[in-house]
Amino acid sequence: MLAFFAHPDDETLGGGGLIASAVRAGRQVTVVNANRGEKGEVIPADLAHLEGDDHALAAERARELDRAIAALQPAEHLMLDAVEGLSDLRPPRFTDSGMRWIRPGLAGPGEDAGADAFTAIDLDVTARLLASVIRSRRPEVLLTEEPDGGYGHPDHIRVHDVAMRAAELAADEARAAASVGAEAEDDPLAGLEPFQVPAIAWVTTNAEKMRTALAWMEQRAAREAILGERGDELTPRPSTGPLVSRAYPPERIDLDVDLAPVLGSLTEAMRAHRTQVQAVHLLDDAERESAAEAGAELAGWFAVSNGVLQPIMAAASITLAPGQEATTEQLRSFFGHD
Image (cartoon, rainbow, N blue to C red; front, side, top):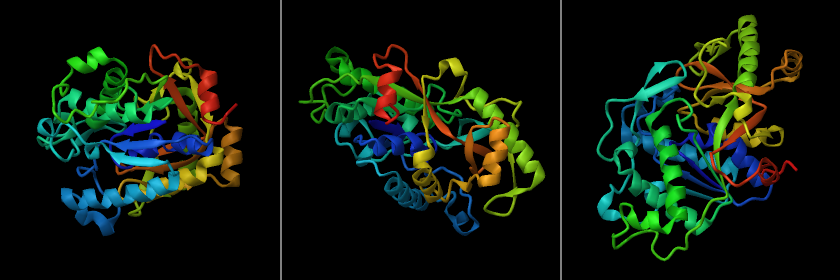
């Protein structure tokens, strides 16, 4: 499997359960991150001085990423800008494009993206780099964001677009020959045989199950305050309000992967991203019983910098991109759920 996500923490919060499940099933997994998240907000007070210092925050988030990767245990991890090629068409380092919160759960473009921002680089250039990873690793599954990027972050949306374009370039020699970078002396696709990924899988969440989980979390938080890293009270997203774009109706979910066997690895990876993630909690016995009685299929909760509690769902969901040849049964087997 090739798992492609934006910033350090996205590989964990977006794909961590699926990465750990694939590893547990004996699959070779390569994780690729698009940039180092230097525009991110910082949660812990002792690291607050890093916010706004792009170089220092990027270095800290890279260290967090190393620890998260050690917990998830994929066979390989790459930064996209470390893939060689197209040196005259790209900056040597890809940076965070930034974002702003439009409302809880929905992000929009920031105002401080530079010329080396991931979204500022020609789509075909970044896609061609990723296509070379696809051709060289030849994955059975390409795992990435859904078209709206999970919650609207410009880099997440770009990750989806790059992944989909990269799959096209990796598979189709005619398209690859006509795309930007084909004439470059250091074309990363040169000499690599075309390869069509059998399954392109988008990370999604069952919207109905998410609403049930949020409703239970509202009741739980009403009984006893749940505090964040800085002692502030965290509140769940309203169960009746708008959900993140990753929440799909049940009929659009192609596979649910039970995360029970990998929750230890997943939460260890989540806690590794200390600047970005807080209040990681697995349900205790009483909470599990209460959630089960309410029909809520969740394993715990966490929050990011906006202080909004989010469920750790009991299963990770996948939606296949349109036109895929793989079947649900093949995907189930891939993740060790025969």
